[in-house]
Amino acid sequence: MIRSAIDLATSVDVHESLDLLGKADKYIHQLEVDYEDAGHFKEQLIVARARIFNAREEKQKALRLVEMQVSPRPNMSVEDNLDKVKVFHELGMREEALALLEAVKKQIACDSLAGAVTNKFVEQEAEEKAEIHFTPKQLNSMAVEFFKRKKMAPALDSLHKALRLTPRNIKVALSLLKVIQGNTSL
Image 1 (cartoon, rainbow, N blue to C red):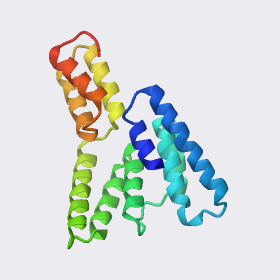
Image 2 (image 1 turned 135 degrees about the horizontal axis):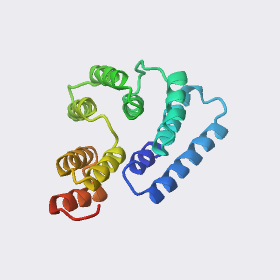
Image 3 (image 1 turned 60 degrees about the horizontal axis):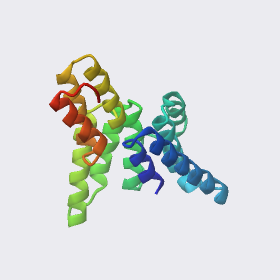
Image 4 (image 1 turned 120 degrees about the horizontal axis):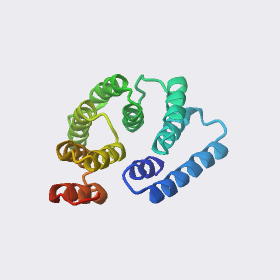
């Protein structure tokens, strides 16, 4: 639930984002209180907290937390590794993100339908992380700035990348339509 809330928070408006991040932060705190010795999932909570910092545009706090307490080595859980990939990518640690994605590919058993689907997802993630260096929120902000300076091609490119990362994001889709139509404001 915490991971989903953080993912959603990076693609919605500021008010809703802050609400979702606040709830995720409370759940993390509650888990830390309920499980004082949370050693077996401590890194997961640190990754989630770093992603919250980053989503709140407190990148330096997130970066410091990740550099000091998150290992770039894969662990046994594919889901945990994918979450670490997200935080590395969000913080500009591309090499770590791509290396971890490669490790995840090796973890997945492709002899089943679920393994094949997961493998396809990981391949898509690796491709996106290699090509797109920003979060959907950052890309949308860049598009707004390009649009204000009447640089339509870069605005379209930024919005296209944001929509590729969050294909169901209505705000990005509407912004894309506005740029295509040449409206005067995003």
